[in-house]
Length: 122
Image (tube, rainbow, N blue to C red; front, top):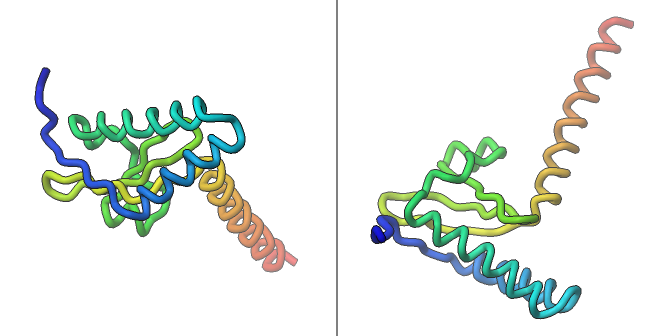
């Protein structure tokens, strides 16, 4: 098997978030659930070492312009950035929270545009 080319650096905020994810799963569902979700995230991150561009560009314009990518792991988005030969894993968020926030932003923009167009027409 080929040795992974890239180094994975787990930054402190990401480590804390992963610990929190595990604790929440352990309290709500049990130890096995906590183990499954953390294994799933860690396995996906390990896979990045050989395939650093497998994630998609971040939706957020600022993050995207800085080269951040996101990897979907179940209900979580793992945000990372490739710099040289190192992948910096910064944080893991609940996908629903991000997607709902993005949709709310889109709806607000559409409503504001619709209101503006309606005012100009009237």
